Amino acid sequence: MSDETPAIGVIGGSGLYQIKDLERPEEIVVDTPFGAPSDSLVSGTVYGRRIFFLPRHARGHRLLPTELNHRANIFALRSLNVRWILSVGAVGSLQERYRPRDIVLPSQFFDRTSRRAEWTFFGHGIVAHVGFADPVSGNLRSMIATEASSLGYTVHDGGTYVNMDGPAFSTRAESEFHRKMGFDVIGMTNLPEAKLAREAEISLASINFVTDYDCWKVEDEPVSAQTVIGHLKANADAARKILPKVIEKIPRQADWPEHRVLDSALVTDRKYWPEATVKKLETILKRFL
Image (cartoon, rainbow, N blue to C red; front, side, top):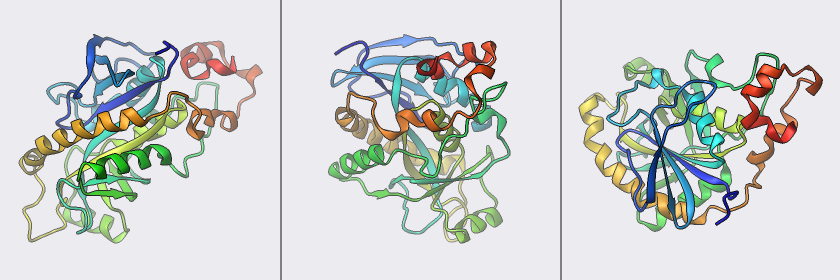
């Protein structure tokens, strides 16, 4: 395997703090212009492919969703030549058909958060507006659906993930609003990862494991940390089985549409780019320099 072969990143969500079958694991500390990632990364290989694993909430689950430094997380992965990201996370179901321990592969996101400035690499003299109509990689999502289904899991390919701030779960009024809007699942982390991955020209798809029915289903107990934790172990076990099968199918050439989105996104003329900003974003902009 050439050292230039693009790597694959895995962001582990609640309950997933390691990957099955990772060979020659090595812990790596990465610093970025945006600060430190959630935790040190673990490098290794699966089926001969270089993998970098990052626990989203840090080992031991020590970071709130609102404390996550998403820019540092994605930038760290891009600096290690990651061009595909498998983002694993726990979600609440907003519709009867999505049952606990089902897998949902969202095709859309809806933003119900209060944060914007922290979810872009650009600014400070360089303006970019990436296309985000289809926020996840259709190719990668299709691979996940195929491999997860082949293992016997219940997979829902497509749907809308509504991203809330947290860390508190929804009120019943909020949950009913989200249901009536037609959203499918709710979570606190995947949208900023998708936005930043797109800016970094990384193909990303989310693998969401349902843990609960939020709090709209009044005949069930309202969602609580204890309810969620009860499903996390089974979901993490499923993720460990699915990930290696997907990794084996990911191509070695980064030539998908997501890998060149900046060709049509950079607005500021090159002659106006401040050198300090260029230096800061060199990992992302190097092919334009």
